[in-house]
Length: 75
Image (cartoon, rainbow, N blue to C red; front, top):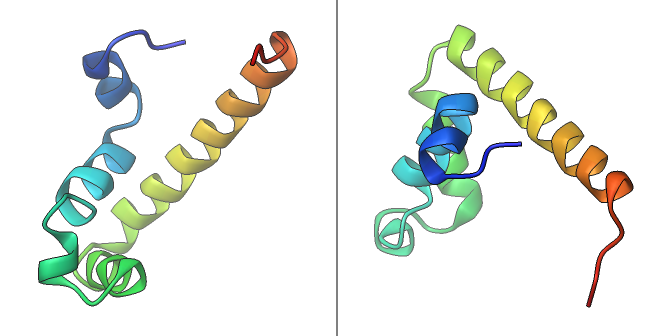
């Protein structure tokens, strides 16, 4: 499990690029909303990188699911 922001970016570089490049705090000024930002990202990104992004997002979801089952949440 990555522990630092650097480790997260190293393990999942494409989601880091998506979130940092298109979903920054300036996103509402640059795009009409989340869907427009994602559409812009996908339109300007090659299919290979989109495939890598998709795979890394699946890895992130699997990591979250395994973490959730490994230890119960404490509220």
